[in-house]
Amino acid sequence: MKAEPMLKEDALKGKTIVVTGGGTGLGRSMTKYFLELGANAVICSRKQDVLEKAAEELMQETGGQVLPVACDVRKYNEIEAMLKATLDKFGRVDVLVNNAAGNFVSPTERLSHKAFDVITDIVLKGSYNCTLALGKHWIEQKQEANILNIVTTYAWTGSGYVVPSACAKAGVLAMTRSLASEWAKYGIRSNAIAPGPFPTEGAWTRLFPKQLADKLDPVKRIPVGRFGEHQELANLAAYLVSDYAAFVNGEVVTIDGGEWLYGAGEFNAFDQIPQEMWDAMEKQMRGKQG
Ligand code: HXC
Ligand code: NAP
Image (cartoon, rainbow, N blue to C red; front, side, top):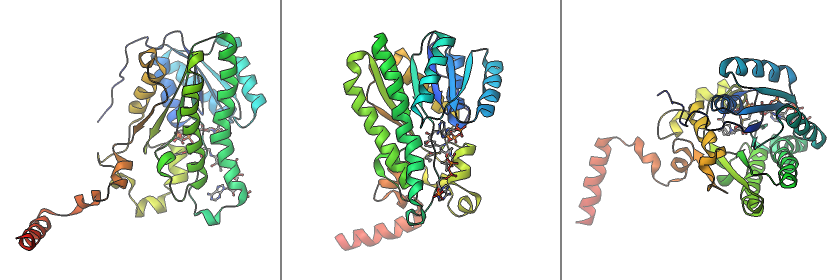
């Protein structure tokens, strides 16, 4: 399948959108679509060289305007500087996409105490820092705006082997819902997307290293039988940050091909049972009932 862009041309025209971690992976793909829909973009992360290359390519690919700003989301002063650079360049900011993250897989008992801080500082504290800095600005300006947080489905199920990430994403989801209530009075919406597996270099190298992928095929856990396409996520993100979604607030939208429900449903693994075995079992069970 090849996903098509979904929204009307110019659906995001005039909006300036900050995407944390916008130079790579899903952040880059969302940014590209926002630009195609007429937005200006600010991409930020720690690596200036990666950001500059991505900005150059995105501008060439879309004809839009991209400002790359090195900014570590763990550091509030760097976020304030990024906000200032955004306002200097574009005069306004309308949307924040909290997409930056850090993660790795490990049995929890093998982690050093520092590992939890490293992940939660990027994911939870980083999302909070950006939200606070831009939120204060919007409230002071009396400006309508919205926030989109990229979480995961294990934000509510939890998951072994990624405990720091699960705790941090659960916190981001709680923040999404809390501020949806608290800041709606200022015209600030707050929503989240929970993606299932979408191939990116950042996630794949850290979460599905080759030795693991050979043993546990992640596609087998997805009822639709494939990974997500970046354009599918970008379509959803563009809708949620656009004015078409003006009445959507406090929602988390799952886009995972049914993966987490498949894992949760008691009997879902029965889809591996062949027809002949069903025939034999049915005969046996009906025989007993009779
Ligand atoms: C165990 C590890 C580890 C590993 C790091 N640590 N890697 N522990 N196993 N593989 C621990 C160490 O204990 C170390 O503490 C501490 O983390 C800091 O490690 P550093 O390498 O010094 O940190 P840093 O250079 O700041 O890098 C941060 C990072 C790195 C998070 C570890 O991976 C990174 O920069 N990630 C950014 C991009 C990313 O992760 N993308 C994937 C997002 S995917 P000690 O005590 O030993 O010094 C995602 C998808 C979810 O979230 C859902 C998928 C379906
Ligand atoms: P990715 O390419 O590794 O993206 C992570 C980004 O975060 C990078 O651009 C990284 O850039 C940035 N970042 C890390 N630490 C930072 C910090 N301290 N300050 C600022 N930026 C920082 O991985 P991805 O797969 O596209 O993930 C994007 C988002 O989707 C994440 O929130 C992830 O949890 C979520 N997600 C992904 C999947 C998937 O299957 N891919 C599934 C569910 C959820 P620098 O290294 O330059 O800082």
